[in-house]
Every structure is written in C-alpha cells, then in structure tokens.
Image 1 (cartoon, rainbow, N blue to C red):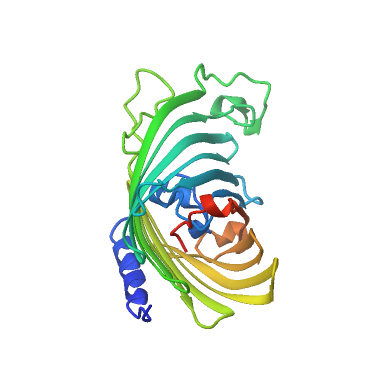
Image 2 (tube, rainbow, N blue to C red):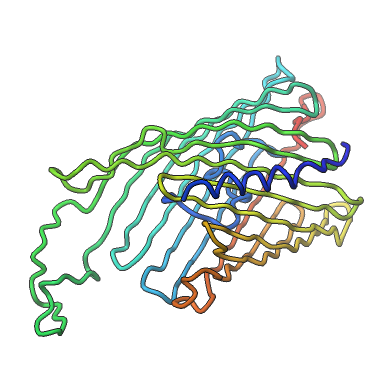
Length: 341
C-alpha cells in the first residue's frame, strides 16, 4: 500500500463537521476499541473466528454526577464455502451505564449482524445492523426534594410529596452502519459511519406528560494503521458524533512496538493519547496498551481540561479495555483462510 497522506485531512474534516452542532448514549474514550457503539458494520470484521471484547469506565468519581459504564461483546464471522467474496458477521453485545444520585441507568442488550463484500482482496465494503432490548431506570433512595427542607435544614424523614410509580422504562432500538476497508499485509484503513436510535424510542417515565424521544445518534470515524517497519506500526484515528443538540469530536494516535517475536510468544507495547472536544477542549487521555499473542489490554485516563475542572481538579476517569481473539485451527483439507488481515 502506498502511504496515504490524505488521512490527517480526513480526520481534520471530521473535527470541522463536529463544530457545527453541539451524546446522550454511552460514551467511551477508547472509541476505536468499542465497535459496538461506533458502527454495527464492524461486526465480525477482524482476523480470527471469535472475538470477546469489553470496556469498563469510571468517570468523575469525586463529584456527585459520577458515571459508571460497562460495554462487552462477542462476535464471530462465517465465510460461505461457495463464495470467496462474501463474509457474514454476527454477535451479541451488552452495554450498561449508570449516573448521578438517582442512579439513572441504561441496560442495552443487542443482536449484531453484518455482511461484507470483497471487491478484491484489498477493498471491502460492509453493511451492519444492530437490534436490541433496552431498559432505562432510576432510584429515588438518595434523592432529596424541596418539601424535605424545613428552615433551611434537610430532613430525610419528611415526605417527598412526589408520586413516583414508574421508575422503569423498556423499549426496542435499531442501529445500522456502513464501512469501507482497505487492507494489505501491513496497513489497514477503515472509514465508515453508524446511525443509532433510528426508531427514536419514547423515553417517558410517566403518562400524561409531553412526549420525549431519544434522538438519533450519528457517528463518523476514520481508523488508519501504517506499518513503519517490521516491528513498528503507527495508528491515527478520529471520530465525530452528533445526537440532538449535543456533539463530540475525538482524535487519537498511538505507536505499537513489537518487543518479542518468537514462535508462540509475541509481545507488543502501545503508547499514545486521545483528545476530546465538545465546542472547546474537554479532555486529554494518555494511553498504554499491550498485546500478548491473542490477548489485548489497554488503559487510558481522562485529564479534564474543560471548565468543569473546577469540580474535578482536572481528573476525569480511568478506562480499561480487554480483547481476546480465538483463531480456530482446522484440518488442512477443511481449512479456508479468512480474507481479513
């Protein structure tokens, strides 16, 4: 592959788009390690037969509006015996998010599917679909209300004056995406977009209130890996998201070094950083990762640089990513090489 010098300009273009509008969905710093919330079309698009992946994030623990997020998935792929130009992906994902004194939470269970068509060994087009069951809920145990204050003093034993009969909301959701992939033995480029909450499900906890719909979330991204040598690779990635009046732009870069190259024992070390924007600078997130054979782990930490750092003292939150890929070894007569590098 010839060096693709236009990549930085594509990523800058994503940032420029993001500044035109101001998500409510699950947020992760390592967006490039969480395909299930970036684009359903990335389902099954990996070198191997089975992939297990998970992210855990704890944000703003020291302020009342702390967030806890978990996202995990399993996906696989199947190449039909009668078609070398097709690859089907399928999987299952679970996302959980909880925030604030009310413990406002979202449980999201999804079925994932994709179809990839090989234009030739180096160019792949993929479409994906994600459909799932969602539950949104909150608790009132730690909430306080105006009627529980007397003479400026809070008394938790006083009645709240509120009638909270329904604290659970269930709904179905739908997402879709498309991805273009260029690949050869050393370099990989993915460009694509995902569209979430296509059905705009209702979010009302109570009847006889104005209708509230979950806005569509749009996600555009670029992810580029360039082989600099036999032991060093460079990654540049960018992501822009929009949801209703909210927006976010992310950019990341890292270097991956192969430190051990022995049969059955490979070790890679990755160093880099992410930056996040939302109209203004929001956070800088140093990253360190390691890959031992089929196991990948990564750690990032948000350093908050927005106006909210008055409350956070520039601390954002840690995030951990884990991925394990299983590559089946078939009998020689039955073996068929997957065409994803």
